[in-house]
Length: 67
Image 1 (tube, rainbow, N blue to C red):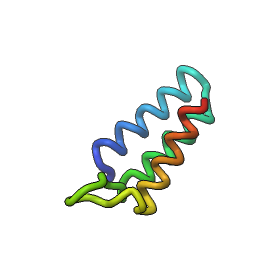
Image 2: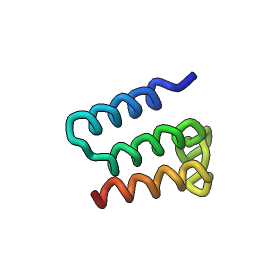
Image 3: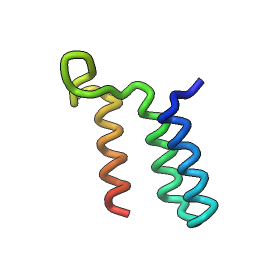
Image 4: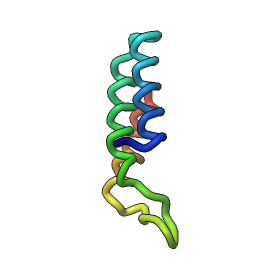
């Protein structure tokens, strides 16, 4: 089962593909959805910035910003 955020990202990626035919952005958003499950927020109750999933989310975000 996916989280609401993962589900929202998957719906968003489908809309981007269908309305804008942007497969690059669609793929990045799907990758982001799959990665965010294990990601957390830096601080006392989350993962720090060195956590593998947080690093992946940051890298995917950089790729999206470049589009």
